Image (tube, rainbow, N blue to C red; front, side):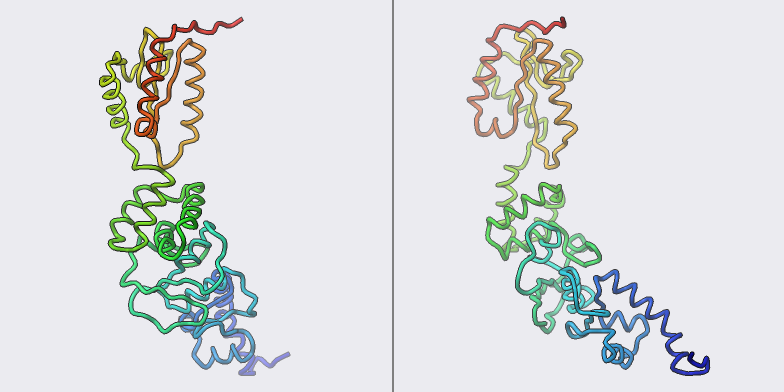
Length: 320
């Protein structure tokens, strides 16, 4: 047993709190730390060299180390690349898209965006310098500083083929990541970025044109009814206990105007189907009208309304 007056033993005991802090930090950062973080924990340059000499730290980049061993996960390698580029750096472009699980993990250099002046490069890291990075364009995912999902899509649009961008955007849409308001604000910040045009095109391809408001949808539909010379419906009335958009009582015809929403509301979808069933059992015919149909198949829609108005009213289903 070491003597309590042994200076080496005393030094090891005094270092234990720092070593625990180091272990905790490394665990949060996928097994890696930077030199500037070690200094904040109180390690001197000589102590850092000593930890490296004894195999406790393994150099990955200048000033970045794996703690304990070099068997890093992909996220550990991403974190190391970000740390190597300084405290303001963020994962970006292809790597950010992969972190959000929108496309597979890419091969090749790791993309990192750094605000400010160009830094000296690191092998295996592709640095993207920007004058500044808006606070809304950066976040942290699983402990890794990274561009926001919206900014990642914009950056990805500059370095990939359009089909790959569409696939990433489609994956984001299925996870409800893109937000229409956030995209609009990103567009305003993007200025002359060359990724803006393909990103807009990919969003338009996936979602169609910018959605009309419910009142705009109603105005366009009623204007088409008048232009065709058809009888005007009663609007926003209750039929069989259901609030409907348009109602022709003589023909028992209902038209519902379904405005497109960026975020799909599954509960509303289910409620609408239950309402359609209730109206059908009460002898009503329901036609659902979308913005896309008014824009691209207006004549066919009006022909359906004409047939609905001409059909004999159906009797309500009766229970037996």
